[in-house]
Length: 129
Image (cartoon, rainbow, N blue to C red; front, side):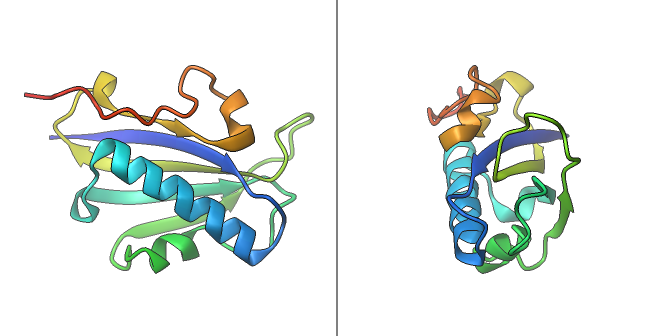
């Protein structure tokens, strides 16, 4: 079984605790559904926020969803000119036997412009053997 990285990003509507947690929950729910991720198979989750988001930690949303025994880490993304505003990015390290081309990466809302090839990719993953 390999450890695969499942990526996603979204944007918060405002720099408030509630907006950050709502956006993070929506993104995690979409990633879990699209990939059929089981909590027990997740090694860790790494979140970043653009510097204009500082009202909450995205990991708090994961904890609210029941990820109590999973290693979670929040970090502030570097300040980069012309970066997308109010962006939350996630990298899930997932223990799975699926191949890389069977993963669904999810980019929601304004974050869809970061990876148009993966934007709003909500289709079920390809069957695996």
